[in-house]
Length: 229
Ligand SMILES: [Zn+2]
Ligand SMILES: [Zn+2]
Image 1: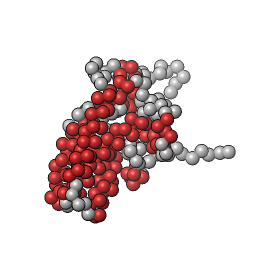
Image 2: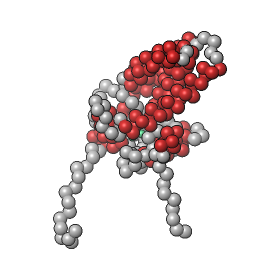
Image 3: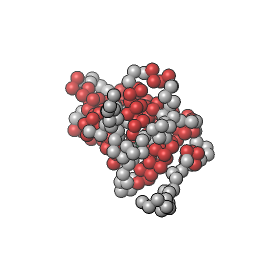
Image 4: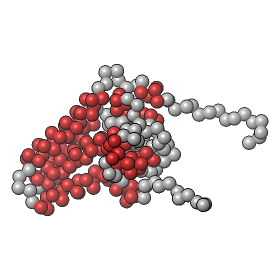
């Protein structure tokens, strides 16, 4: 580039945090947004456990099998729906990249107010949607496997969903929060924090709960080793 050549026009600045936060609906209730999916998850979990009848040891395998499927789904959906424009689901990518990732960057991960839960939790209807998708899957599993295996799978999947919400919320609390006394939580947060680097978000660290499928697919990003003395 010649010395006196004018600088290329700057790309438009991304909306600032305040502008994103201003889009949060006026009557938004952060407490309800957090409590309602948790209550629904607890209700489904309790109902499923109550309906269990003489569980055989082999049926308990439904719990780790469902967890594994949930980790795989989490990886796939985060990579292919939230960071790529999937047909009919582009709005989810838009919300995730233009709201969640612009509001919270790797250097600025913490919530500034309870209202910003809107930018962290999945949309308020998600828990009902997840349950609506799980019920036919559980019915299929009841026919193909057994009723108890299906109930255990349903309970595990709902518990995973609620666990996802709470873990993701924990990562977006201030780094000095007492929750990080829980062993392992700071490491999980660091995995997600790196995903919030805009240079990394489309390729790395897609698991939000436990990075099982980031390890399987080789998408777990680690800082390059320092060279020199
Ligand atoms: Zn996040
Ligand atoms: Zn993301």
